[in-house]
Structure formats: C-alpha cells, structure tokens
Length: 442
Image (tube, rainbow, N blue to C red):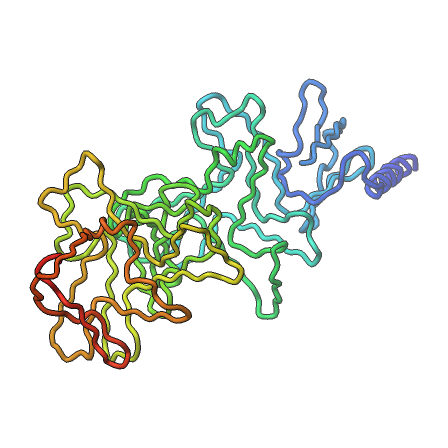
C-alpha cells in the first residue's frame, strides 16, 4: 500500500509542476532547435536554458526526467520548479558570431538549389501581416551595421543590404534581371491622400546626420562605378539611360553644382508652344542677365553668313501674318521713371577692339550686315528698316554724340553737281520720299 501512495504522490507533484505559471523564464513563441537554447554545463552538472531575449534559467535536472512535450505545434519544456518554457514553429533566430581578422563569417547562410525549370523561387520569404495600426516603423527585412568608436570599414565596403546577381556564362535567353525589385501594390478599394507629410514611394533616403553635417558635406545620393562613357551605353557624355515602361529616356547630368552646366548640346524638339521659357525678377540691377552667351573663337570664320549665335526660322504654307525670326521688346510698367542721359533700347550692339589688335583690310560694320537673298521680285515692298511709332514723333533718324563721328563736314560752296536721288522712305499710303545725292560734300 505504501508503494501506491508513493506513486500517487509523484503523479500529483508532476501535475502541479505542469500547471504552475511561468515566472523564471519568459514564455514566448520561438522555434530554435533544442541545442540552440539549451546546453549542458559539465562543470556544474546543470542544464542552462536561454531564450532570444537573453533571459536564462539554470536548473539541476534529473537524467530520467522527460525534457519536452510536443502537441503538433508547440514544444513545452517543464522545469523542475514547475515553470514552463514554450516554443512554437514561428521563426525567430538570435545569432551571435565573432570572427577573426581577415575571416569571412556569415551569421545565417541559406543555400537553395532550383531543381526544376519554370519554378517561382524565393530564397528567403518574410511576410508581415497586421490588422492594426503599426508603430513608428515596420520593416519586413531590416539590415543594420553599427560601428563602435574603434570600428570602421577600414578602406573596404560596408552595406546594410547587398544584392548580387551572377549572370550565366552564355547567351541570355531573355528575362529581366534586377539586384533590387521594389514592388508597390495598391488595391482598387485603396484611397491614397495627396500630402507632403505622408508619402508613397518606391524608396526613401534618410540621413541622421551629426551636428557638423558631415554626410551633407561629403556624402553622395548614389555612387555608380564600373560604367563606360560611350554611345548606346548606360552612361554617355552628360546623360544616364533609364527606361519607363517600354520607352528609353536619358537623364541629363550637370558638370557643376548650383546650375545646369554642360559641355554638350542642348536640343529641344518641342513643337506645341515655347521651347525655352525663362522668366522671373533679376536680383542684380546692373549685372543681372536673362541669357548670357559668351565664347572664345580661335581664327574665326563665319563666312556662311551666320554669327556665333544662330537664329533660323523656316516657314511653310501660306503666310497668315507678320513673321520675325527674333523679337526684342522693352516693357516699361506704370510708375517707371527715366534717368537723364540713359538709353532705353530693345537692342544694344557694338564692337570692342583692344588697342593692340589690328583690323587692317577689314570692313567694320558697327550696326548690322543686312542681306536679302530673294528668289523673285513680286513682293509689295522691299526695305532695310520698317518704322512704326505711336504716341510721339521722331526728333531725328539718328542720335549722334558729335556730327564729326558721322564724318560731317561744313561746306558753303554750291557748285557741286547733283548726281541723282534715291528713295529714302515710303509711308503707309505708298508715298515715296527721296534724298538728293551729290558728287561731294558741297
């Protein structure tokens, strides 16, 4: 009878131990193998249990005690104190590695081999689902590198995430290859908001800079290496090639900060309106420029009739109104007042010559060389200039600092022979006004 009492007492002790609440070690769903969370200390003859949070339990365990129970989903380890240590099938790994100098150590290595053609294969799949509002951040995959005060990349490369594709050593059979594929899925019922505080983007870059703003000073948005500057390639002169849907585009690059500076042509084929539209208020009243074109030409020769800056217009069809290749206007707003001695002109032209230069055997034209290369004579009027002035009348055709600058000479003789006359101007009624010409200045 005493033997049966002893057996019953052991059974009661085991039942009480099984149902007591956990206290010594946190109960949580983990899936580490038994040898990852338990090890036998030979010195103390104790079994040491530690969960990923760093909580540990050291117990003296009889060699005959059943260490675990499995119900198809959870392993439950019964401690002699009556506590329980539970682990489910959920994957939570806490890996700790220490490598020596010059070694390569991987905390986790997953090696998969695709065994059949056409299979959709994912080496590692991380899925986070939530029916609740998440916290400050939620990441399905997180990579972090933290250097201590004595740590550094030491001239090497450090990347929190690394993607690498090793292509086949043969002709490609098609398909698309990306080191990173960012996929954004928005269901039909979703209602996104237009806000600068809440964003939707394929990528986000954030700098947690120090007080000296070292990253702002020395950092880069991207670092691209291994490209060759050549036509049809990813990088060609001042452009980078991208593709949107099925169309290739080229992003222009500037050679200087703070402005778009390029040593390559800028070409526009826009036809719907103004191709280049510059507007705004110039901050510098004296040196401000809307457009500045400044070049140096060695051994110049613009014998084709075009200048350093070329403006050309080709007309087609029937001319339906006024046509001009270039237009220059000065608009004076209400309240603008003039200053004595200042010029107000839509066009200022001139020639500057250094005292040490020589214009020998050169015809110098201060204003403009005007040409007409006409295929017929059926135009209504042909003139060098057209004048239309409203609101006031001309004081003179020319304003000259000194008559001598126009080679004016006083001559009181009246015996010079008249050579003839030439049409000087024609008014809107068709009336022609002439200028008489003489053989000398008399």
